Length: 373
Ligand code: GN1
Ligand code: MG
Image 1: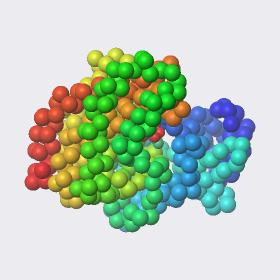
Image 2 (image 1 turned 135 degrees about the horizontal axis):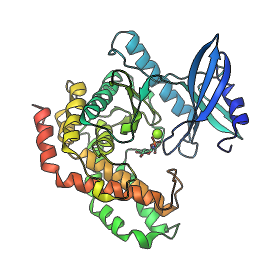
Image 3 (image 1 turned 90 degrees about the vertical axis):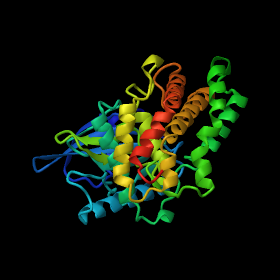
Image 4 (image 1 turned 60 degrees about the vertical axis):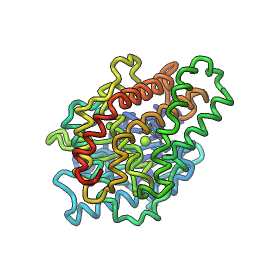
């Protein structure tokens, strides 16, 4: 379906069990993968808003499994909050079933669709505004993992196979270099060489997990800063969104992704690399916030990896962007020529900045991880 074909879109969303009259529909800010819309419904003079997403089926091959994961996670959080385990203002996403009580709609022409209740009164940011927000986001992500610790992890399946596996990401990268599908390889020799020097470090997390040095836990796996919603009135981080990648993995992946997206006060696709560096003030706030929520259960081996996980994530994501650039931009949505290359360069710059500050990062991790590292 073409974006903007609202007649068809209206028909699709009428298939969800929402009461009242549909009275507004608009595209809503999306990530790099799915397409998102927001609708307004009126019932007895009261307006309610909803989020509708077309799930990218090229990326999420098993939508049934994906939606079963999300239902489990959101219901578990709702139950925890109902039992008083939440904090004031803490929220969870809530799925809206279809009129036939399914969790998504599918037809051959329009693809796969799901609906959430829109979480009112929230704001989010592409670039973290200050270290207070960084602390809040990290604490909220830590709480997310803490609250989900008693889910039977065997019930949550990987929606994208080997998603957190940097060895696999590098294999994909090697194949993209070999195939040179888009004929772009000559322009990215420098980036390819840099990625090569970082291979061992980038694979540290997955190697530690495979070797049993760190535990398998339920993770969010896409906790970039704009996936944390802040209550506009209280300024508290109140809700973690984008639950597509919830899966068994390592919380170092989560922590690393949060740091690489939060501690850098620049856009993810910033072209002026002189603006791309990691702020130690933000990093400190992130370590503090994450440990405040997870200190009772993280292991010493996990804490020891806090200082290098962010770099491993920046490199792995840079390699993913560069792979997509070499393949002709088939995975991440692009908005300009060379967009994935710009994104890759920015991630590699983040990795360099982290590398230059590694000893200070270790010092802070040791300070806040008292007794754990
Ligand atoms: C994608 O969908 P979105 O934009 O939240 C990607 C993440 C990357 C992120 C980088 C399923 O997330 O892994 O870290 O872009 N999601 C998937 O911005 O690949
Ligand atoms: Mg996503």
